[in-house]
Every structure is written in C-alpha cells, then in structure tokens.
Amino acid sequence: MAKEDGKTNKVGKNGKLGGVVKSDKDKNGKDKPSRGKGDKRIDWTLNLAEDRIESIESSTTVSERLARAAKSSELLSAVWSLPPAQRLMFHPGTQVTDVEGDSTPGFDGGKEDAERFISISSSEIARYQRLMYANGVKGSPRRLLIVLQGMDASGKGGIVRHVFSQGDPMGIHYHGFGKPSAEELDHDFLWRVKRELPKRGWIAVFDRSHYEDVVMPHVYGTYPEDIWRARYDQINEFERELAASGCAILKIFLVVSQDEQKKHFLGRLDDPTKYWKFDISDLEARDRWDDYMDAWQEVFEKTSTAAAPWYLVPADNRWYSRAVVSELLRTTLKNMNMTWPPLEPEVDPDEVRRRLA
Image (cartoon, rainbow, N blue to C red; front, side, top):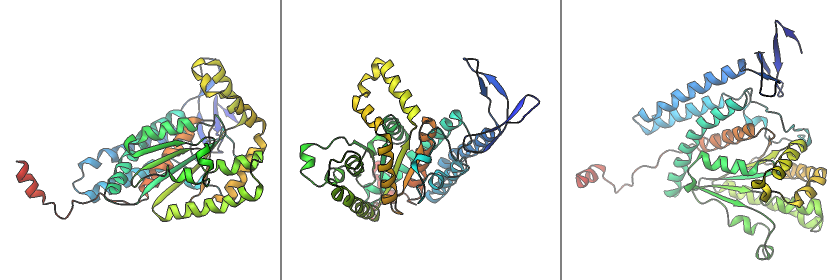
C-alpha cells in the first residue's frame, strides 16, 4: 500500500478507493482511519436528502408531497455507489461461500455514516408505511412480507428490532418459526406460514420461515429426498401467487462468517444476561456449516425468482446489514407508487366544517 507524506491511500474491502486518509490512534493504541472523501460525499448527499424531507410538509398538494418524498428517497439511494437491490441480489453463478461476511459492498462510508443514513431513511420508511396502511384500510391489497434467514448469531433479531424501530408497530406483524408443533405437523408445511401472512396494508417479518422445511431435512435427512425437493416447486408457486395478489416479498439471507459467529457465541457465554440465547444445538449446526451452506446454495438457485428474489447480505458489520435492510425496505415501499386515499364520495368537507363549528 503506497504512502506519501505520512498519508495513506486506503482501499476499502469493497475495492473502492476511499481517498486520502489520515491515521489516528484508538484507545488500544492502534491506527484508526479518519473520515475520507467517500464519507464527505455521503455527508453532502444526506444533507440534501434532509433538506428535501424538511420541505415535504410545506407542500400544498398531495402530488407535490409525494414527488418531494420520492426525490428525498432517490437522494438517500444515491448514498450507495451501487444499489443493494442490484449488488446483493442472488444471480445464477453466485456462490454464498464467496460472500465475505465482513465486506460492505456498495457503501463507501463507515458505521457513523450508516447510522446517520438509517436515521434519515427511517423517517421515510415510516411515511411510506403509513401510506400503505392507509390504502390497506381502504381495501388496497398492497402489503409486504420480509423473510429473514441466516446462521445462528447472524443478527436476525437485531434486524427485526431495527425494522420495528423504522416504522409504526401497529402495522407490523412479527413471527418467529421454530421446530413445528404437533398441530403444525398434521398439516402441509405451508399451513403455519399462511396463517402469519401480512394483512392488507401491513408488513410481516418472518424470523426463519418455510425455508427451514427444506434446509433442515436436506442437512439432517429427516424426510425422504423426494418429499423435501418437491417443496421447491410448492414454494415458488406459493410466492408467485402471493406476489400476484399484491404482496411484495423481500427475502434476505444474512451472511455471517464463522469467526464472527464464534465471537458472538463467546460473548453470550461471557454475559449472564445473554445465557438464554445460547443452546448447545448451535454448536451442532456450526459443526455442519458446510452442509448448511450447500443446502442454502440450492435454495437460492431453486427459489430466487423475479417475483421473490433472494438478497445475500454480508452481516459481520451489523451497521451495514441494517443499512441494507433500511434501503431495501424503503425502496420497496416507494416503488409501490401509492397515493393517499381521497375522501369518500359522500363526505362533503364544507358540511363537515359547518357541523364542527
């Protein structure tokens, strides 16, 4: 790495040139990079987005408000050198084992930049969520399903809390899928999933999902191969019908490295308030890491479709994975192209004002 006049031209993990960076020392005496040129561009873009957002409420018409909200969302997306929806979507030939958990593709900033981005983006997510909820009240079928998958300690719980903090909990439904109960085993594997789907205008967040019913028998042989392999076609048909009915689907796989998982496991053992998170089965799954990766690779190849694509999100840096989810969530809601429902035909606003007076 070339040095000149005590300064370093630092190349980030995503291969982007971060500009001239000065070194400082952290509390452990190690070099800590200061903010570079990429960060200044992010600051500038986020400032523009904030200015645009502040102007929305002063708009006099619904169409103008929606136009300004769309522009602010476009500015937020400009923070990314390559949109996550494009960079992280699974494509034929993509190998999950090639995804580096500690990488931050498409984002040239650091944790501080990501947290500021998330904070600003959350206000627009809340705006679009209210818009979808209002349309749902009036009968619109638009809704959103978020499927979160990943190995243990990949940050699924943190993403769930993050999604709830971004919007109005009144319109968000969460469900975590564990080992099927006796009642659930008496039904088709999609039965328990269909019961938890989002209502009109709502967002549903699945912590694990129907994909466990393919991956687990694939890894452990709990069902004959012809049974669990047939589920790929069932899942694709289910998701295709769901999307056609007005439900957008975000399927996110959080890619955590084995080293990062180990760090979180040890952290749970060192903190009595996190003992409850640890189960010995977590180690059994870790011992079969390669088997799991093979199973998930096949899932992506068989079920990443135009109607419901998979996104493989590096998750060692939790600030990065949360920023990615914030971007995917906001742009998905924005792209629904909804407007605010008008007054019912029988409502005369002037008459209502006279009665209230």
